[in-house]
Image (tube, rainbow, N blue to C red):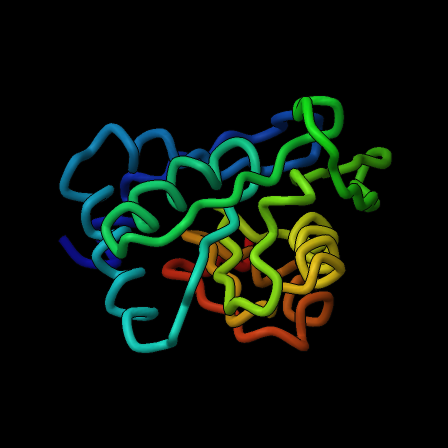
Length: 175
């Protein structure tokens, strides 16, 4: 498996979830064991020597990438959920979407204060969700060591929104 073959597993769905949006669907990558393994192995190669002490993964597809990575490296996995999904005491952060506002939350007691964290999602578009997640984790005392996405949409301003963090993506698209 290589990056060109990985790219072939990412479906492009026009006008989803709303007209004018080109959706990059990673389910083809997940259904291909070699592609999925390539993604996790590539993450391990990128971060094995970075001193990562915990992984935060963004609901929902970020869970699919962050969980096997955390498992393989023996690290805690901190799920960041959409608002209203966690039963305990939470910390929340809101952010702007292209078509509204949203909120994410994490259990307050799960944030590893003083620890170096990798923040993971499947795709990075505007950076708004990940900036809110990073702010949430930093508010709980964690240090963001890096942000990872399988896909980065270079035509959108995520690099500016997340400029204070080291960013890594495996695939970048400008269309």
